Image 1 (tube, rainbow, N blue to C red):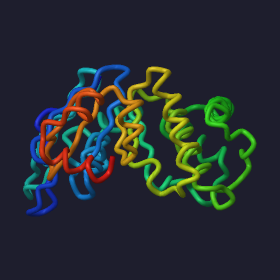
Image 2 (image 1 turned 180 degrees about the vertical axis):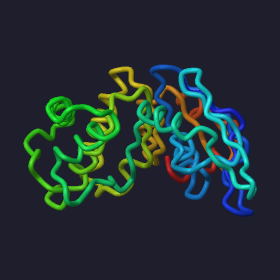
Image 3 (image 1 turned 120 degrees about the horizontal axis):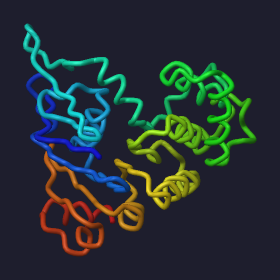
Length: 251
């Protein structure tokens, strides 16, 4: 479903992603681990082209998205219309929720359905209500983000992503901005999505989630993947010294 080949990303002279290749099959739940600054979040943003890769190829369902250098030597997307279209097949849940503060819960979910998918208001509302019910937020339809807890805001953000009915869900540290008592309610939603067979890439620092829910764990260190495999194998028999040190402190 998703193929990433030799991905590089630099910011000026700083190379953050250094030739990473990853394939994800339908139904894979891939936990992406790593220390702060290791490149894992940048990698996720490149997949959705929130950051333009410096080089490499990203393919979704066999359709490749490529970048090339312009006259100034900057990396640019070769076909912006293609990226806009393929973005509707990938949805991202952010660390800081990214909800519109001036919109209600319902409006936050319906706006992209109307503008990106061109659904009618009636269709958008029907679909939004379906997914807000799925994450347990039907009793907050007319609330604004400021009236919600962090866990509730993140559940609305997940409903917004689900409502796009994407092929792939991308999560960038979905629980790191939450108070400890709110983490579990968001993780439970993600666990339920995994049970449904949804394809997900999850940047996370939740070790128990990575071990128990994912079917594959990737560990980033200094812009490269140094550990990759099934969670039981990776956690019980780590091959890299970097990951051994990482789990000795955090696991």
